Amino acid sequence: MAPIEAMTPFQAVILGIIEGITEFLPISSTGHMILADHFMAIADREFVKTFEIAIQLGAIAAVGLLYIRRFLKEPRLYFILAVAFLPTGICGLLFYKIIKTWLFNPITVSLALILGGVILLFFDRLAAKNDHHHEIEVSPKSAFMIGLFQVLSMVPGVSRAAATIGGALAMGLNRVRAVEFSFLLAVPTMVAATGYDLFKNREHLHSAHLDLLLIGSAVAFVCALLAVRFFVGFISRRGFKAFGIYRIIAGVIFLALFWGKSFSP
Image (cartoon, rainbow, N blue to C red; front, top):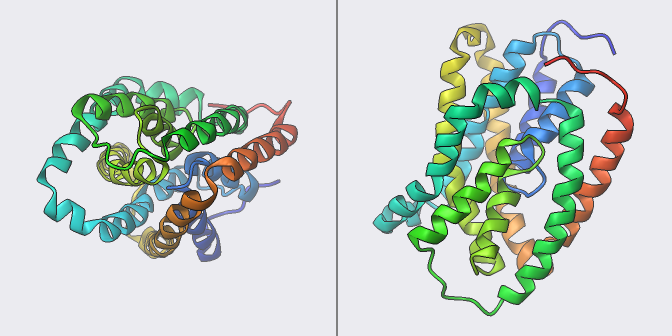
C-alpha cells in the first residue's frame, strides 16, 4: 500500500476510536494503533507517532472524570499509585529508546497479543478463585508488585491493562477491584508517559495539526468513557476469557498478514 500524503480528519476519528476503546481493555491499545498505522499507511510518520501519544490525554481525562471522587476523597491513594508507578517510571527512562527502536513493529505486537491472550486465560481462572476477596486493600508492597507487572506492558502488544490486572489478581484482588486499580494506575502512568513522549517529540507538534489533535482527543475521551463503563460490567459477569480468545485470534491473523515482511526500526 502506497503511503498517503497526510492524515485526514476521518483517520483522526478512526485512531481516536481505537485509542479510546482499547486503552483500558486488556487487548493493547499501542498494539492496535501500530497495526492500524500500517494498514492506513499515513506518510507523515513523525506526526502520526506524536498524534497517537497526544490523544491519550483524552482517554486519561475520561478515567479522571469517572474516578474524580476517589482522587478527591482518598489521600492515601496518591501514595499507593506512586509506589505502583515507580518500577515503570524507572524502566521507562532506562529503556525508552531501545523499546521504541526495536519493538514497535507488527510482528512483535502479533506475538505479544497471542502470548498475552494465553496468559489472560490463565488469569481468568485465577480471578474465579479471588471472587470471594471483597475487602482486600492494596498495600504498598502489593502496589509495588503490581507495578512490576506493569513494566511488562512496555513491550508493544502486551497491554498495560492486562499486565496490571494480572498483577492485581496475583496479589489477591477480585476482578472488579483489580480492574478499578488498573484504571486508577493508568492516570499517573499515562500522564508521565504521554508528557515525556510529547516533550521528546515536541518539534513535530505544529499549530496546523491542532484540529486533528482535538478531533482525536475528543473521540478518544468519549470512547474511553463508554469502554470503561462497559468493561467493569462485563468482567463482573463474564470474566476475561473473551478478551483472551480475542487476543489469540487477532494475533494469529495479524501474524499471518505480516509474517515475512521486514519493518525497519
